[in-house]
Every structure is written in structure tokens, then in C-alpha cells.
Image (tube, rainbow, N blue to C red):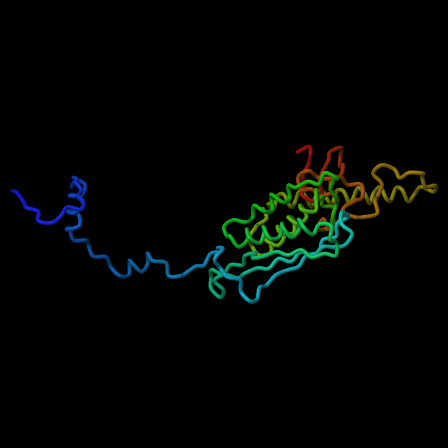
Length: 266
């Protein structure tokens, strides 16, 4: 059948079999769905996730941490402020929003300002920001690192900043420590008790000697005792390569860590 076209043709398209099938499917009536089913499928809570379009509130909650490093003359104070998302609901989240570092020492001012601005931008971007911890703790100072309180080795000042960020993220639930099993805790407690008993026994032997030797005998008791939580360790302890803590001692001819339970002998 011929069709006369009276108007000017501005464009055309060829009708394909797929187009015919689509038109036929549109004419088929859809099955009715119960309202309760639709309401169950649609999420009821409008959960807000961290993203860069969130405006800074007037008031933020935060924490301040102190760094006393031998690499700088004055102490440094690290402040991390958090934003609370979905406050008052079961989906309440506390996420880091910005970070500041303040100190009397001005020698590191430029890179500290640059680092904190970049970190704050990453925090506000959202997503998984825990990667910052691993990146910062992997920075090594070519002049060498130092030991902080508790005998933990810090390879650089940036690494200690990373350790503080990690500690803060743990406190707000963003990072979770792998918990020791009951068996591992029992072994560690046994190792500490063995070391304390051996040190006490050697101390009793030294006290019976009337003339003190010029140098302390090997295995003699040391001034700092091992505490129950492993916060302090003997002065002769060396660095553990597993937990980076100066808590590695020789027990029965085997290097054993009194902090994490690592043993060179397995």
C-alpha cells in the first residue's frame, strides 16, 4: 500500500525485529504486585555515607594526641576531628573529617601543613581511608628511627603520625585489631611467667654472693620487670620484627617476644 508524504522528511529510521518485539512486550499487561512487597524491597532508612559534598558542621568532636620525638625539639600535638553521620539512628557512624598538627618547632612546618591538608581531603572524600595508616607507617627516615614509650620502634616521624591515626581509627571503630585466641593468650602468659620466675631465681642466687662481680652474670635479674599487660620490658630486650616492639628476649636458647608471643623456634 502506497502512502503519500506531504511534509518534508527531516529524518528516518528502519524498524528492526527488536523494535517490534519491544512494542509487543509493552502491550502485555504486567502482573500486579502487592504493596507490602514493594515496601519491603525499598530501603526505609536514608543512610548517609561519607562523601566530599558533605558540608562541615559548626561543631565537630575530636581528640588530641601528643608526640614527643627525639627528632624534634618540641612536642607535637595532633588533633583529629570527627563527623557523626546518621546521628541518633542505628546506622550512626563516626568518621574522621580533618586533622591538624601544632608545634613550636617550625622546621617541619611546610610538609606538615601539606600532609594534613591532603589527609583531610582524603577523609572528606569518603570510602576506605584506612590505607593512609599503612602508607604512613611505611615511611622510613634515612637518618634512622627511634623508640617511643613502651619500646615500640618508629622508623620516622611520619610513621608515628600514622600510628596515631591508626590508634584514633581503632577508637572510633574504623579499624579492628585481630584478636588473639584464648590459646595464644595462654601461651603468652605462660612465657611471661617463665621469664619472671627465671629472673627471680637468678636474683636470689646473686644476693647470696658476698662479693659482687664487676659485670652482671648472664641471665641476672634486670631493673624493669615485665608487667602484666606488657607495657614495659627488660632493658636488654631487642626489637621484635613482628610487632615492632622492643620485647624480644632469649628464653631456653630461643628468641621469644613478651609482647606478641612470637618465637623464632615456633
